[in-house]
Image 1: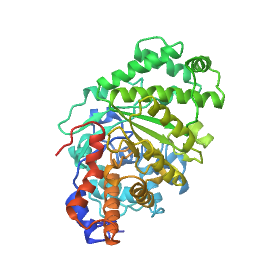
Image 2: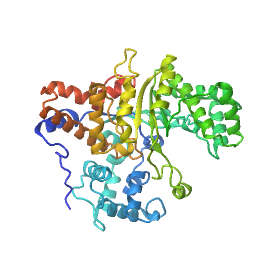
Image 3: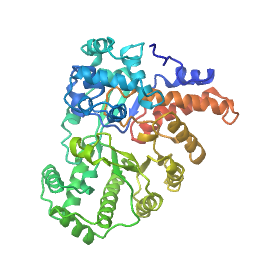
Image 4: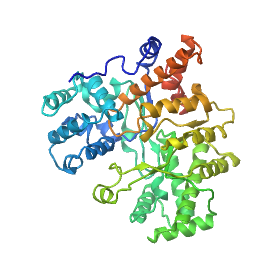
Length: 464
């Protein structure tokens, strides 16, 4: 079957095509949030099979494969790479309308030149594997193909950043991202994690004062090694924080392996987030809050395969009071950094956008962002609705654009997917008579959202 995704995919008018082909298509990519493996990028080794490159870490694909009735052995298990590929091909042909369907076909076409939709038992597995051996398919070459200029990974405060420190490339910057979630997430391995953090900071951690000092040491280390982005992941935030004395009591309880109450845990989470957020402001970093997902809700899946296996869902949390409290605390203390708020539930989208608007200021253009359409909203309708909400609640010209939020090196086709939707969105507004029909003006809008704003928000020099 012919791959129907041609050069005009998602572009419904002559203006949308002109904006895409003359402006958006070849702009560089700044990916300020992803989960790529920095060591894999540094070592720059060819992949053995398309399954290793395309399926190994992609829980978006895994979820669909389970929906298609594929046995777990062909998803995360020990089945041969070719059999896993065949299982995904079977799945792919069952899900038109799902963003994974379009991303996958775009990846096969743009990276490999595959002009057909793969079918079971065709020769596509051999066709793709043959290309993987060439120099054009090393990790760094894949990034170069899509014009990626910045890759910002997601890293624990205890990470040594060895790959980031060694990486040197003519056009690509590899930036660490500081994500302190493990400090405020309690589990059976909490004590071991804190000991690892202590080792990385070269100091003992016995109380909350020690913990904050160690976090500061690691924050400084990340800054020295190029980090300019922090990221908080949480289901939701609460409208309270703790005194240092209370935080110390709860932290010592957690070190002993005793589970805190829900109230204690959420108070402790706010305490750590506020502490780190103030460090972010002092360093001039850009921070992100990823909220609204309920994670690892399938206990069997989590027990057998761990986190990030595809057992997550949109959450039904109440965000407004807790999030506004945390941002208000930071604003009141003069420590609110440039911030992006990510939301997973479409029912909360306008609230997130309007809340961000309430904290603009400081003479900083677009200081508060309603971050890009994320996870369960990263699809045609989700992105289109997201652009509409930003236009109505904020300013499109200050929107920092798209991220991959991905573990796959082929996922940069998602930026192309986003840019096509963006150009079509703008052209439809012109056709409706609500945007000016001025190509130079519209070109600047596309450039700002696709590339320029994100680069500037990270404090980096805009590449002409």
